[in-house]
Image (cartoon, rainbow, N blue to C red; front, top):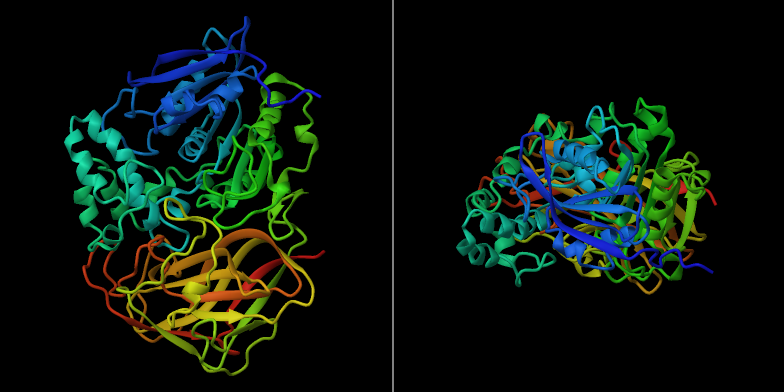
Length: 588
């Protein structure tokens, strides 16, 4: 039997090939191509991390696809490494430069004129940004973005609830800022910014505890002014608005005319990108080919999923079993062979959605997302005012509350609830036992009775919370957990809402002290089978740090303020205020 992953061609590498953009800036690419006569389809791979790291790695996409009959353009983005350009500014130039690069690549002497795009994380974001060109480059025929945001205000810099993704924003800026400082002749500053990081020159290293906790946050604008001058704009644009909408795929669907294979995973910080891009294009895109030719693939891993080395792990303490071991490269090869080589791979004969159902640990194909057969079912919060900690009296059930005493806790920004895994980046990601945080009095815990039969939840999850605070602005967090018979509390998804954004992400408004408001906390989505004997748990608190920046409870603008104020938080669950989590239950 032929191994589809085995090399078909030897690979030739052309180093630092120049491509002039429309403004005259020259971007450099390594071109990896088959050592064979004739022409081939081209795959464009554009990123900011230095093309050398992927050009020279035999396990990464450029060499894999070149060895399977593709010309791969592995390009440094503008103002990065070998490419020209001043003052690197993430995201803004990627649509124009991507367009120009695709058309340049189509005219290469080894090209057959058909171009696709590949790449993960930022290299996936360059694809979503390119897709917003209207019109698209005429030679672009297919795309495969992996682990990328479609809305950069919802899962890149900020989160759907309005808090900043603090756990990765600053260390990521430091990581990329080293090259920026070197290019600007300021290499002597690298040691200074590195001093804020736990250890060395490693992308995966978070900040020190002191650096994460530093206030005011605006000091980071000055600290990063040379390494990441764009950071001040990020801080200044905490509200959703034109700054973000201009690069939001969900607002710019009109020009999308190409098939896309969207790939992500349940513990990916950018999960929203694949889910929302797939749904938006299939439901609202004007072009019929684009609507009918989208594919969605969601695995069980965290960010930087194992596309080159298949594994059952990749999300904290979880092992998802042998069924999780798949080759992303093999899947993409079938995709591009269909669209760029006109080969009968059968990829378009299959249902468009592939999801990994965790808990059951099996793949399943579906015809749409979200699933049409979903039964959205509220599980209500209950207690007699004693839901603090996992040892308290908080329960979760299908029964609607009547008259119950509200729960309360004090949220102190000086002592935030620590992040314990989840869909984050830089800091530890994925599945971890939540019992350490559930022992805190500022964490309310609501737990169901053991399930009598298995229950699958697959789809978007939201918590509808009725709450009051003594602060002018504050945060509320929610986390969905599976409590196993041995007590292990396995996190599934979490979310946050900043009170000022309860009604609008673009027009914030402060709250009135002690007044009850309704808050919708978006927990994104998951696919998970609760086994019989397991219990469903919901945690409610007001911080998840350092993943999200701390709300200081003062009502000050983001970045301002050096001292926070404790706030008394009240969570209501009654006939008038039926707080609940809405679970997407799938009949089985």
